[in-house]
Image (cartoon, rainbow, N blue to C red):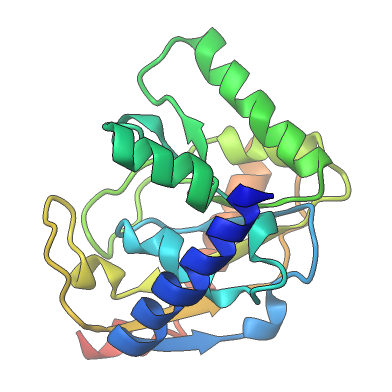
Length: 215
């Protein structure tokens, strides 16, 4: 209960003011966000702001059910970051450098979260690449989706956040940013078909981004 309260306060007092006041955020199709889980929110990855922006979009009454899937090597790099990430933000840490057995064990926590009706924020690219340029999609999200028939996969495209907090810097720069939320992807017959459909959705959603045409 303490972690739930801390997360609600953190999002209400820190995350939402940062996102909606400091950023010029343009949200399209917000009504496509789920009202309950289990759901996979599959977003492109530009910046460490990505997770905070997605958290801010959910109502306070639901935010405790939102679980970001995040890189353990970054978010658990020191005691304070690890405490904040695990006990306040509620991340599911993924070890990108471990062996197959370790990665599978961590994905088990993702499966348990979905079984618990949580909303997972996942970045199919796996890591941040060049700002505002999408990298190749990894198959991890497919393996999560195919084992949960009742779990929609909702694609989200974000633009501009790579300019607000570029990779390798700690300086926040206010910048106009877009968040475009798509319809659920239902082609989960095989990994190639699923990832292809997801990529098509990303391309279509990107066309609605204002920053796409002004930067």
